[in-house]
Image 1 (cartoon, helix red, strand yellow):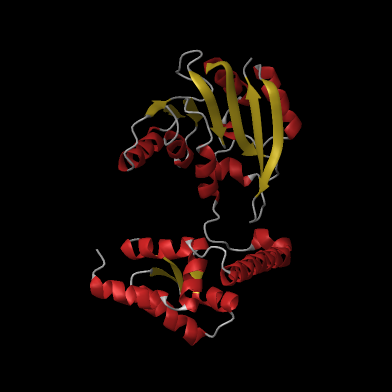
Image 2 (cartoon, rainbow, N blue to C red):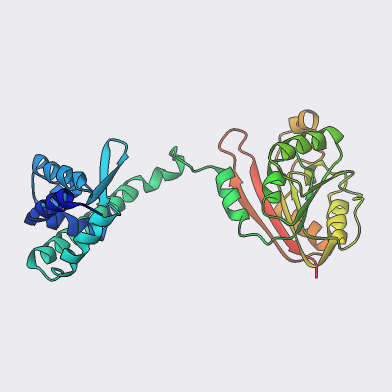
Amino acid sequence: MIGLNGTSRLLKALGDETRMRILHLLVQEELSGTDLMEILNMGQSRVSTHLTLLKEVGLVTDRKAGRRSFYSIAPGPAAGFWEEVYRGNLQAPEFQTDLGGLEALRERRKVDSRAYFDRVAASFGEQLLPGRTWEGLTRALLFLTPRARYCDLGVGDGMLTLMLAEVARSVTAVDISGEMLHQLATRAKAKNISNIELVEGDIEDLPLPDRSHDFVIASQALHHAVSPRRCLEEAWRILVPGGRLLVIDLLAHTEDWVREKLQHRHQGFTEANLHKLLEQAGFQEREVIRAARDPQPPHFMTLVATGTKP
């Protein structure tokens, strides 16, 4: 119940054409004081006075976004009272004029947005943008992947394994290093992830049964294999018919230091070489593409390859 005094104040608030116009606009969408000034062609102090009164009687609520305040219709009995007035005046000329002003505001926003992106288009990829991280993008895309049985060959820092586990039915993590697997187990426990099976073994001789997985992923692992072909053949063996392989590795390069410092046995692969390895292992629907180039020297290029077990 609003009460007699509240009803009196509410009727007083609604007894002003400008305040009713403001309420009509806020029914359409949330607006800032500056937006209302532009649509109504009124000064800041006048709009602020009306908004303050509407807030006091419970018709309007606001939220802060940085230095700006945005206003909307407040839920509650006062809003129900206003609805009766609103429905009876939908075709009022003043309301129709304000709708035209609101549409002009929306169009200006589009123009401003388009002008901004046109201006920065050439250098957009070089800008530091909030929320644009490869981890964030990968996490988002993983939610499109099937809930299935995955095998991750060579877990590395475990980031991909953990992200896969969030969406997979199960993930088998295979690595030759027991300590790598221990670190992964620790991180999985901290995240309450329990669908990862840790397997210490050689990616060229997988201690896993035939046709036991739906997807196999070898992310930056193939260049560590003595025989990359053998590794791919093992991936083919453990995949179910129709199962898919994803390889992420390096394009062939001349940086010899990776052999000693990073234990790389191969200095990347050419597209033709990787395509041939997939073919020899028995994969169909093969594709190999250049995916990304590191921005820092020596600017390693990443290859992505896929194949399907028939």
